[in-house]
Amino acid sequence: MNSAPSQAAITFREVSKTWPQRGGAVAALDRVSLDVQAGGITGVIGRSGAGKSTLLRLVNGLERASAGRVEVLGRDVTAASGRELRALRRDVGMIFQHFNLLANRTVRGNVALPLEIAGVAGPETDRRVGRLIDLVGLGALADRYPAQLSGGQKQRVGIARALATEPKVLLSDEATSALDPETTQAVLALLRDINRELGLTILLITHEMAVVRDICHHVAVMEAGRIVETGETYDIFANPQDPVTRSFLSGVTGTVLPGFIARRITPDGTGPAILRITFAGDSATHPVLSRLGAELGIDASILGGAIEEIDGRPFGNLTVQMPAEALPRAQAYLHAHDLRTEVLGHVG
Ligand SMILES: Nc1ncnc2c1ncn2[C@@H]1O[C@H](COP(=O)(O)OP(=O)(O)OP(=O)(O)O)[C@@H](O)[C@H]1O
Image 1 (cartoon, protein in one colour):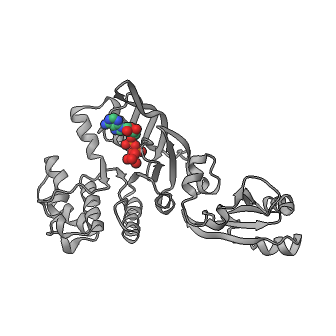
Image 2 (image 1 turned 180 degrees about the vertical axis):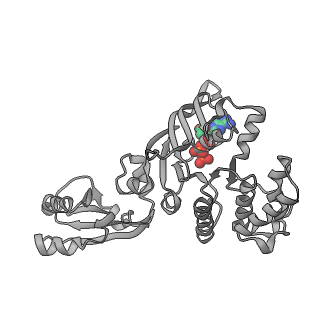
Image 3 (image 1 turned 60 degrees about the vertical axis):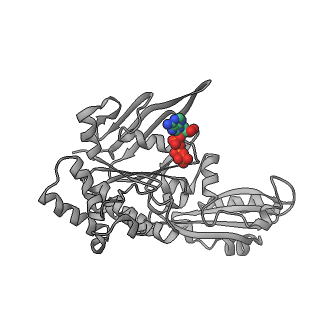
């Protein structure tokens, strides 16, 4: 048998969504096409109003496309209604920024709710609910009410509830935006485990590149209703093409220029050059600066940088200052060693 290409669990084809507005219409989505790989974690990142929520809500039929086609697990959502749509929703779980738990139900009661709605509650499903509560680490808190839980615990309930109908796809609508950094890490780790252990496809929306870096295999960058860039997370970090992507990346560790330099930088000039060097893959641990000094006699001073791990691979950024006249030689040397460079400007 030929090795099958990685299959899409969700496909968007030329999908548009317009909202009527006084004096015209606002396009929340404008001919969006995207494949969400089965069994992977795909992140959609964009600024407020970019269309992320609208895109996500098309997947479980909470919104209808104005044009184009959305397929989930081989089924056309755009045409589904009634029984078909209810069946599809059992295959697509969803978690929310503000958890959306019922205050008058315990943890157990909240997790059991989708099964009751589906009319399948019973002794077997009680056991499933218990297993899910254990899976998200809340075994000891099953009889508590939401008001007695922390934000992270509430989101764990949300995750267990979303898994109750044994879905194949999990949608996450800014699931960690209301959580502190430590709790965010714990919830992201849980989502990563669920993806691995259950083989669940996860589609999440976020406005934080750190969330993408920490758990997404693939990413799509949205701006004004369109996807401006898409690819594997590592490639997008290592070689971003669109200015929107670059601006999101500048918020992640190691890519922000220190204020005292940022305030003095001009696009061109003869003052010292500011160069960003990106290390990816095998080059991430090269001792480039010492070689620039030893082999080319170029003195470069470090302004900022970090090495981190993305999708299990090392990735780093280093921002350095060097004499402007040394720039062409330094860039030629760095490129010859598979390092990417970007001239950020000159110190005026
Ligand atoms: N029900 C609605 N009626 C009218 N316009 C809407 C509706 N829902 C969304 N919009 C508009 O569609 C556009 C995209 O909104 P959407 O909520 O999808 O963006 P988003 O990227 O999720 O933003 P945020 O991060 O702020 O949630 C916005 O201009 C928004 O005002």
